[in-house]
Length: 82
Picture (cartoon, rainbow, N blue to C red):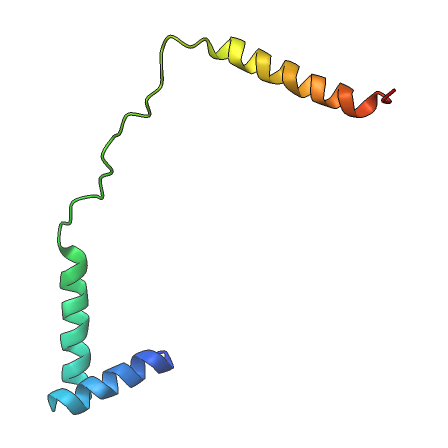
């Protein structure tokens, strides 16, 4: 088994601090990591919030108005000014 350098350094630090053998430290940390993964953690939930959408607004009309205003702006840029 080959460990990445950062993992090997962290493992060596654990060996020194805990006074364990390399194998003991490796097995202990792998067990802890696997046990931590197995815990049934609830999924992240995002609460729903109202966006304040008004149902009395006709979005088709709003989009049409927006398009007309944009058209007027483009025409104003194209036509020469007197």
